Image (cartoon, rainbow, N blue to C red):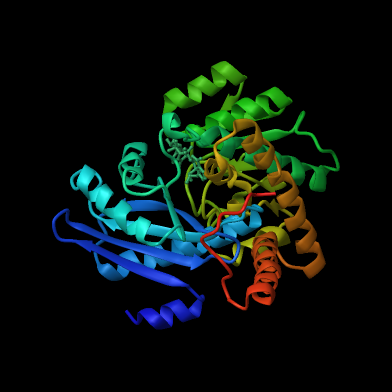
Length: 368
Ligand code: NAD
């Protein structure tokens, strides 16, 4: 791989290769952009088949975090790390402490957190070597399970969409089809039920579907029926790439708004949804509640403050819709514009006052 060409393509700031013979650590930390603040991003552990695959994944994920933090109004940049290894076989205290030491060398430019393949226990081991880690145990100032906050953000984003499409900032009486009733989907159903929405639900796990039927009076459907079921809002809370060339013509909803990452299999599907008259709430804007909640740990976790900030996802989705109309672009493109405009505005201010392209990136700033 021609690393510098890759870094130049999307203006990555830094890539750190971490190696420790004694613990077997092979990790890559990518800092994409720290204009808005230190780069926060999860540490993923995965048995990558090749080094190229690991680098490519870390680069892609780090850049995504820059956009997500910026569009969420957080004073954080984008970063990510990957540890090459099997989470079921290769974990040890020493491995994560060794990784923590590398994070510490970055002096706060990168803040680690939980991700696929890592757990709170791993974050606790990282914490033994560096304070630049979030998502630690609640006894150490951690913010706990992010899912209820992700669900709250999705509900707020849905409200913004409902106001735009139906002219009323309420979900009462609307039919919402929820795909996936796991950590986020369940909490989302609870919120929607309390608001008076009618629920259509499905999960591969029938016991989760039964629970939603019992607790929320939801109507169950088979997993392969949910996409084409007539509804006002389709809420993907299971997998990515649910909107693809095959599923697009089947959708019978006015809004797509859920927690799943990478909802659109390809970027052009944003325009395709818009052409079909379906309003799409961009995934990384509407599912940022968990990130906003965990970021609050950096100021000393306060649940009330975190909740207030998560509720601003409604404003962010409204802004995305406004940009989409202003620029005549689909909402997935408008979300990127929202993020980039904020980074550009703060970046010019920082350059003007410090003469340095990235200002003082390791200094933490309070989120407004
Ligand atoms: P989860 O694993 O707890 O739940 C996912 C559920 O989807 C499971 O119950 C699974 O059985 C079900 N499922 C999988 N495939 C399905 C299918 N084809 N049809 C119906 N159901 C199916 O995951 P989660 O934490 O609830 O996250 C849900 C989605 O939201 C994921 O895409 C995740 O990446 C994303 N997300 C989660 C958070 C968070 O705070 N947990 C934050 C941001 C994004």
